[in-house]
Image (tube, rainbow, N blue to C red):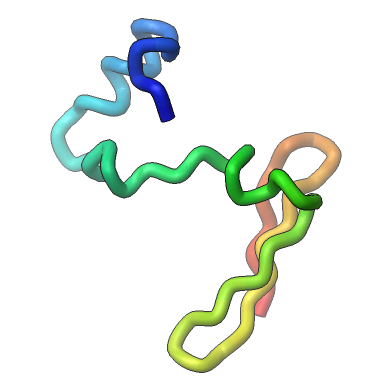
Length: 61
């Protein structure tokens, strides 16, 4: 993510205390570049993260 291309309001929100370090942020477009579903393996369990038509995210086990 290129912070220089973000609107000022988003930059302010990203830099507030308690929010994740910028190095841990992943743009959802990068996750979904091959489709609208991503499979995640977490502690031996498989989850699916799906992007809806409305741009919402749904995580299922």
